[in-house]
Image (cartoon, rainbow, N blue to C red):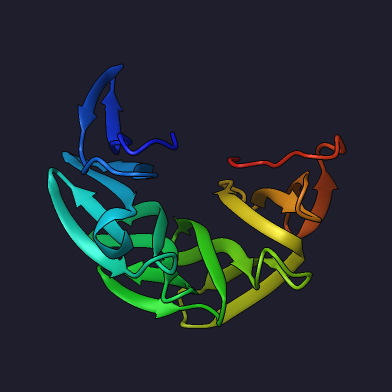
Length: 199
């Protein structure tokens, strides 16, 4: 929604619950349930553009700053809570509230943990220029960090199979829906304006 009455909302079994403040472009972006705990990422444009992690009714401010802060995905693995987003204009991964910058410019869109390996997808660079690239960042259990540039544009979602195959959904050339499997590109649509948001 794009009105000044936007309210971040969580639905459970079709029943809506308002979980954030009213404001222009305020919205919830991701939800994860772990045991009895419910986690939601929320972006609010009011109050200097806050990026929040909501847990069972309590908000934690992860970042703030007009246009330079956002949270897009939350994933819980045991006692560790991971959030993918943007802080100070940099693609960022938070682990238990502590941010780690993954690059100079862009945003992290999705995070998944498989075993003890952490996978993050997003984009590096400026959308309005020709240098934006989708990326897949992997933090291995042994501490090794690996980053893969996929194509020009953006990566929005990750899924890891039990066999270890890595699927990433996104968009290439800023307007063509795409799916990557283990880094190999598969075009989904070529209609002139399309994107893939979840896999």
